[in-house]
Length: 343
Image 1: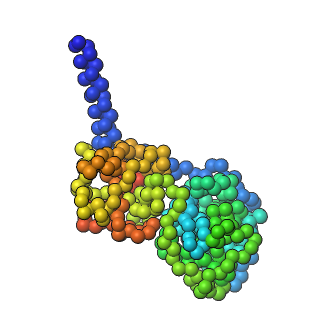
Image 2: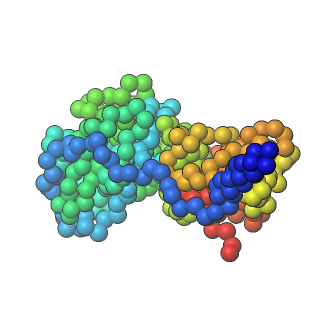
Image 3: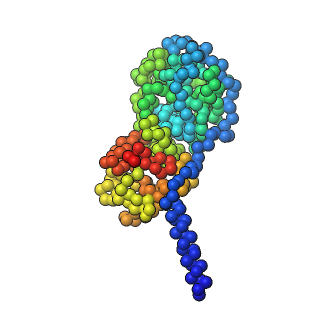
């Protein structure tokens, strides 16, 4: 009888220790974030910017100082005007240029052009769900930059796209078009073939690359993990849900014991994040990644044992209107910490 009691006490203590470890310790491990592996180079390195001309000139040396952006985990968002559009890890629209060539891959955008159309580097590039990884490739530019290609077409962003969901570069100069997930030109319904011109939206400008063709879009990126990471230009890395909406924590909650201080009318402004399977996450810590039952009986997802919410005031992917509200609500880092909260 005594031995049975001792065994039970040991088991209980072990379970308590595991819970404490999950919900009371600092977190450091992350999953995801690997660089593209299966994608082989799409072709020979580029040979410079001698094919452009026009307002941008062809000064290849100037491209060394031009801005670039990182591809990361690619995603797809569905636009009512453009169809399926390829985006980078920040939800920014990716573009292709008609004066480039896909076979062999070659960029005709150098000098000032590359300042207006920042090169998307292949760093950490991974295809969206359902897209063949072999479509992704790398073009080595004259300055050594490794540019992402999709089915051979070099990828760019547009400097006038200020946020996720913008597609102001669509149709600029009759040569710049949003890319579909397979590297073809984005188009409603079936994507147009790589060699066929896509229709220009009303208001597209001339060939100087400075016009705004399509207004900003507000559709959510598709094919994201249930919880993943977005690099916000002001806040840095923040957690987002499957729709690309920013995830928040409430400083009045507690992680140990797990407890929520947001109930009743609070939930109208701060909807809870429902449980997300651990295997449906990308780039976040999974230590202390548990759910807990709220007073109303609903299950809520946590990171590092802190309850997670979204904000009703965020209307589209990329919004961070909940950041700092009331001095108690903050976006969440991939390891579950508060972003920008006072020390």
